[in-house]
Length: 497
Image (cartoon, rainbow, N blue to C red; front, side, top):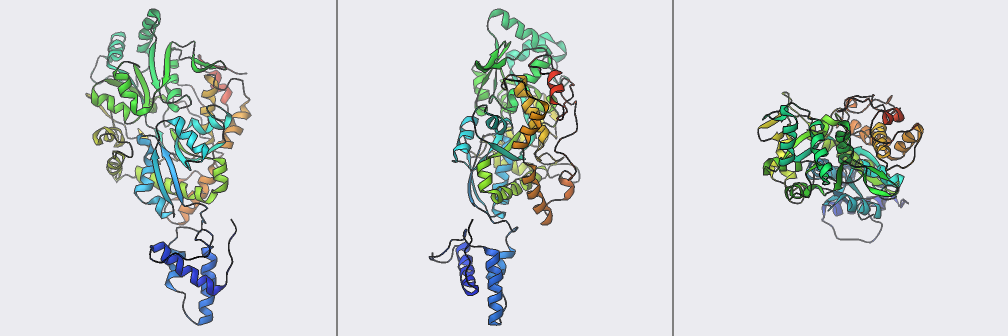
């Protein structure tokens, strides 16, 4: 952006005016706007001018410089972000409500969107500056699945947070198939093995089991497919001719907006679903279903949502993007803060905020169930799950390339990527979308401000890939450096050479 250069005495005048404008005290004047002025340069020029006059630097000049959190010169300060009514929108809500955005000089409006499709479309069109997104959305959009625009992420909003819930009637059938489930507190995790006979009976009758997920490229879709396939149940394939993903399906998976999941299951349109909170706990509270497994048990500490913007928006607003990430990092840290006994310090406050109608809009008790370190599988089965929602610790918010690679393997496994790809393609594609450079700039600024410890950021020697892990429900090892071996290790789904 072109910066106006003016005389030292004019600099003094405009800085004083800027002080009045910021306080909401002065009248509007003609001349360059605050966005056009280089405040740091003006401060230096004003200091020089005061020396000429033999006076001290005025307080207004000092405040204008020292009160700002960093030397970032923001390209845009009024922003609108989108979100879906799920508890993992929490970093956005907390960044706004706790003043982390404001501390960075940002005026942020956050607005609930009706569904993931509309949310993405509004980010691409520029109606929204950015949004709480499914991890798969920036990837799918960039490679031409479900949209076509280069979308990037520099911040992972959370880990875990989902569950698979079945209706009461399906749970009863699963209990008949596996007597070990006939308990008020059955052993967890619960695989889909007990569902096989239910699926077979419905297939024989011509009425396939129907389950909901939130979007074709959502973590929920891939987790539900993973859980079913691990038990030998085919969840269907996407093909160039079948964008609904039901080819060869033994269970029909369909898109349902998250807040509608309990209602749609209650009326019998679907018999189960995979969704984020609070909509699994809602089923327990309403007595209409049983969460059988969390995504923590499907893939321990999996990435869930990200904050996404278009690459074009980032290119035009790089400093603003860094400021946004700074605020989100602080919000995540606030959410995960614990006391000496390991108890969450701020989660109850977060629950109260999230329950507001303009945010998640669910009952406080429903949101509290999972957000404060507990999870109800049944009213008789309350378990401690302190890592059901992770918003910061263990480098959870870092944009790991290996996370992107995992989602790409699932898109290929189930046919959304229709042609085989080389191992190199997976890594190269992830690097177009995941932007640790932006995250690191934000983190370094927070470290210099004393708001973040260097140990809370991955070391500079990382290559952006997490270590290989076999902490999946099927025990198969995922190594982001070797996506083809991982893809081929599964019995159901596409395999590549």
